[in-house]
Length: 133
Image 1: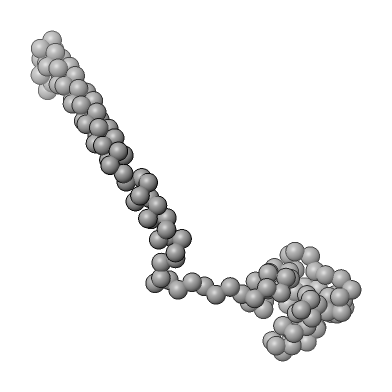
Image 2: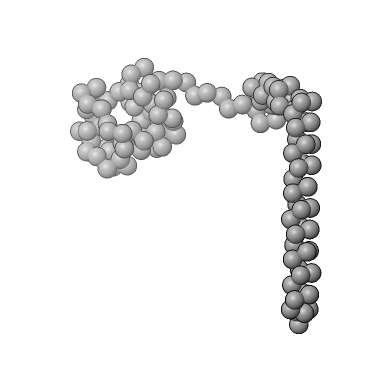
């Protein structure tokens, strides 16, 4: 169904006259008539307003595509399940786990060195200046 016929059908379903639709869209009745007979088409702003008014997507309105059903929220999509499996197989390998453990050990050693330097600095400060009051 072409846009002009779709607009006509939607207008009739809502029970709007051309005049009522024109008033809601801030255009003239003649403009709505031209849209419905196919002499002209609305600009993008008016297309969005029409889709909002009739509660249809722009794809449904302009391209006559049927609305896509929304996936059930409780079901995990196959793509997510495949992605999780891929992550498990390729990222969480023994080699990567060993690398992660080695990285944690290095980070802990660096932290220990920083804390030791901080402790020595504090001791030197106290020895030279006395304990802060």
